[in-house]
Length: 418
Image 1 (cartoon, rainbow, N blue to C red):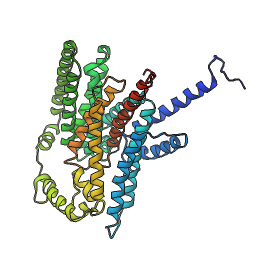
Image 2: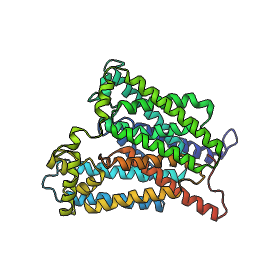
Image 3: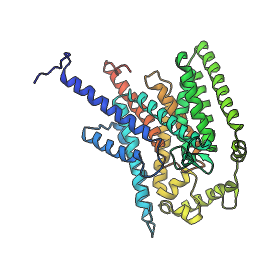
Image 4: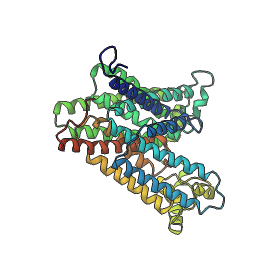
């Protein structure tokens, strides 16, 4: 058999490119499926389980960063197993912990494949934006009843898109929204109309989710992104452009919200949801009152009280990722999660402003991750699929930086061009 193709290229090279194309397409599809979680197990879980398995069989390589991340997440889940031993009735705890472990594997998987090829960052972000536009438009259509049966994409008179909960739907849209904002601020002026339309769709969907957490998350991440762009450039012209484009983005955002506020029902629901403290937050056993109760229970139960038992005991879940770690995963789980967050924040910040091909993607993921950590003080998010993707994006950049430095020391070309 000939070792070259008809056009003169080596067959091994053609096969390698074909395999790379298939692998890249599979990754893009996996990320796109993140936007569709109406029922569980969702298509994302089923597809990712197969994808990770196949990739592992064909040689998924784990660097020391991926192994370190795996160790932290493994310790977190071991804490959950130990906490389960305190329970008399297991309920659905084994399934809960299986999902936790699966999500841990997804974070490690994305770290490994990004370290192997940094060009997958662009692919992942494009797929995430596509998913946000698709599920966002479903949420908008559902809220306004644009077609028969569209109400399935709403819950509690709030847009949910292809999600079960508007409080997950809204935060899922933030990274795509921040990335589109980045492109508005720095991208090709000829593409501004495309970016502007995408920005309006995503921001409108976030607004119609009526998730206070999503509103605050998007606002905080957007401000951090804009500030970071100012800090990383000494060019007065670039800073002027960022300022002008940021002003344009604010005008677009305000215009979209003002138009939405004129529609029936939107203004009333906005007035209700915009209150900083809701009735279920400040009651005798409200969200905030449960925090000191839970932390007090943690001092008496170092192994935790069993996954999901807090909600069964007090009638509502913890609504705090730190308290959730203590109750569901014990002191070991809390220490592991705290270490993971600290390592992610410190490791990401150390390389945040270095001029690398993946720096724009790291910047968007990093500010969104910081916002999620702040949001975690008022909501459980340890089972949010996209949160683990954010972790993988940041740890992937950390691993890539190590490869980059080693290549420079060896006098080699660090990476192929994007």
